[in-house]
Image 1 (cartoon, one colour):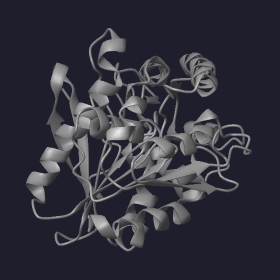
Image 2 (cartoon, helix red, strand yellow):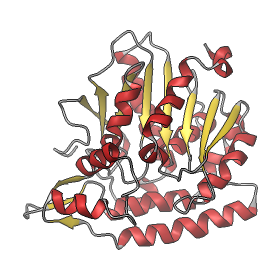
Image 3 (spheres, helix red, strand yellow):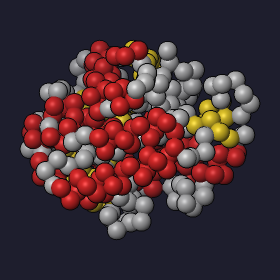
Image 4 (cartoon, one colour):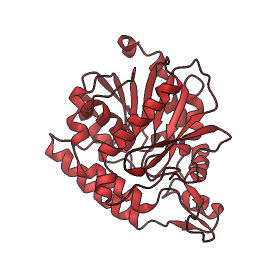
Length: 319
């Protein structure tokens, strides 16, 4: 069963629910901006954020795309999968969830060209779906710091595991409950949290990632429980399968990498060029001065990069 909470409010997006394998219901959304004759873009979010955290960014994309987005399993408005989590929070499930969404979107817009944009683990799931399951209906894709654990470079593989595991452990210690939305907004605005985000993105994040407590108690809770977020981080460290399928990914890809020199960047920025080396048709752009959460730091610049898929000559063969 889905939750009553939606990371994107009904005023800006139509919600439709997707029953998937293992009893999970995925909350999916179509932005009300845009028009039926536009090309379609599906957006995938980073771990712990939910689709609604990107609202101002998605609204920019809706000037030229018919935009769909979704909350990953256990996050935002999507229901939590059954335990044990290593088998229900994993890249095979993430990929199949995206496949289910694509089929529903294609039923809504059967003639529209289809594009993909995604951030972090959702982008990795898209590559897994295309490379290992042979389902890549996209004209082109743009990804921001896709979290694929390398399979053929021991140095990068060890770094990815060494940095992902502590992140999961830290997540389990994160504060989950807040008395008021204002308390949460204050916590998120701290410099060591997300105070460096563009203000409109920080505001969207605060609205999309906090919900009334599900246990009936007064107050609010994170819309992605720490145990789900931690399990998602662990899924990255647990497999190299998405990476192994890159050689069979058939679609032009533009990989946007964070600046490895930025303090809040991580191993993911370092591996983007290696990912591109394995893809048949890919290029990499490093966003100098931006960290892993670049769509929140520089949403206007990131939106322009995604919109460029519609005119970029690098994708001419896919048109």
